[in-house]
Image (cartoon, rainbow over all chains, first blue to last red):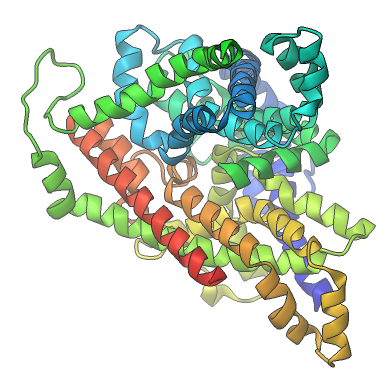
Length: 266
Length: 288
């Protein structure tokens, strides 16, 4: 019974993924004729088409830029707040934390319209810096939540010796809090990477210029262009997913910790 | 006192950005909701609460989206919670096989919603899709269906895709809950002659109540806010059978009714707050 259930669910996960990856090496007629079979005459044409026609290197570069800037910035700003929350006395700490907790209760879909107006006025639409900025503010509350949760558990004694030696808050943050919080920083980083890499909502809203598209948006645009050219759609899926899947294979435990910490707190 | 001020300075950069680009627009949204602004005209008229009353009382499209949203939420919460718990119970014990399967079942969570949407679009394709293909191959042709093409049940098939996407994530939360149950409880139950179902019923289930509350809370918020997956599966804008609140707001906005879309966002926020509140009440009763 146990084995049967697990076997069925394994198939439910594996079969679609194998068909997708296999499909990237097939032509459309072959995929429709035998979706489950191995590619009879494997072709790389789909990859060539996607990478050439779709401006994919630039799209990949855009996604990488957004993640490379927004994740470290969110981590840095979030950890500063978390440190303050952990070290401040009761009431100031509660108020500071409460301000960020409000952000957890407000979904992006409810703020996106006034944000659109604001970013438009400031000339931050159609720009990667706009996407980076909006990623930071939208995910800061989660980062603060996870990091403060961890830093609050650190005992005050940890800082006392350093403070006796005359270390100020900045030295305590940099030389004690950050190194000690490494595991929770790593977990938060992974949560943020997955969120920012996969986000569709803001690119859809903010980006009209094809040259500024990120991966999920480019992928969605595919659908319009290729409609039922599934092998091409699948190739886009593989290209968009490969970095995350490889990183997951290497850093499994951290991924699970990061994404479930996001789930638990977010 | 000096160090307290210094500590507050630490929060200033984050507060400035988050206050200026998240909290401030959230408040501005309330203002836009009382106007008929289209988003680009230099002027607009103040319409007071007219947008809000329209959204709440006589907007069939909004009501349809809300109904779809609630159906989606219900299907995902029931399906995902049950599946996550089942998988967690089966994989809680550590072994090499269970570690591998846990990793595999979690994998879809790291994919993007658009990728997951395309995978399931192919599964559901009425002519070439995997689902009808498999049914045909095993002689169950009469169960073949148009899936997303069936107006009344389409949202249910999106719910299946959503469960496939995130059940592994919730499974991990359940496994953490199950692993905290002291082994003595199971020993005592076995001494009393409890079979495996009774052990589940009287030990596991009550002991994972906090995990269940968490899984239901997160799943309901996640499914109530679903946007990317639906847009990817249904196209833009979605047909009425697949329209949910977040896609409705987006469509209204894209049609140049910014003020009205802002009013829809306000109602959406209130609905989210209501879901969270009901959800907290239910969790408290379950613990009670």
